[in-house]
Length: 368
Image (cartoon, rainbow, N blue to C red):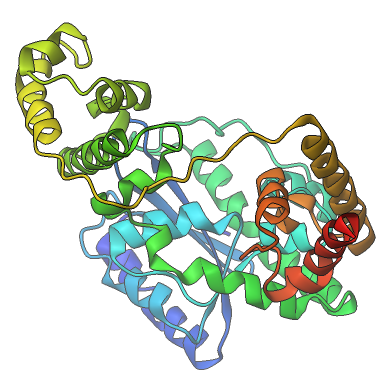
């Protein structure tokens, strides 16, 4: 059965069911529906829970006290099943201030079993269970009320099959001796820094290797201001200032408010407010001694060809091990290993034995 929970009393009635799950160290399927196009943080609209044969669609916009949900997600006696867990964990953490733990991500498990890294839930349900899920509500506005029966049915479907997928994945990973690999990888999902951005660290998502020292520190300070402003106003960071415009300011470093306005960096309404702030930030930049981004020389034709060969080797190892290539590593990881003969990703944990050692051996052998 699929139930819509839209009153405080209805949520409270689920309390004994959650207690029973905790006592029996049970599991629960979880999904969320949210909107983030016009806000900095995603707006949580609906939480779907699958327990046994039943689905509960909890309208978090209609219920004031969500303590019961927070306690459920924090309860480590209950395993939470999700698909593509990172976005759900992010919106749950930002809304309820709790990170679901422990979790099982069916998308990650599928990647360990040879499917694409980004395999969608409906794709997995079709592949593993031969069930075709409707897509009619894929682009729906989950903030609108009342919710239609079609929306509720669609939302319920998103948790209805997670337990079956989990059971199949666990068995298959046991047979392939991949459970330890999976357990190691899932630990990274509990790193809270992946779900929140400290404005001080906002520059790290940008690339400034081609900038000089002064420009790099200018870009860092401007990125910190932009992130703080976006968080404070709860708007997308690009609504404050787009990336290309951010680089323009950092590179050209206009000295006055008037010069910034002439660049048409900001919109007509925001320019009077933001231009003076940007000018002040640029004038007060303190340039450090260390580069924030390394300047990396492009690979020559021979080096690119060699890295392409390493990628082919990675693809072959992926096919042999029946693990998604994207989970093993990317072209960027390969080039980093080639340049530095070391890699935090490829030469640590389960990846080291699966691909890292063999790729490094190929590189070292080529130098002999």
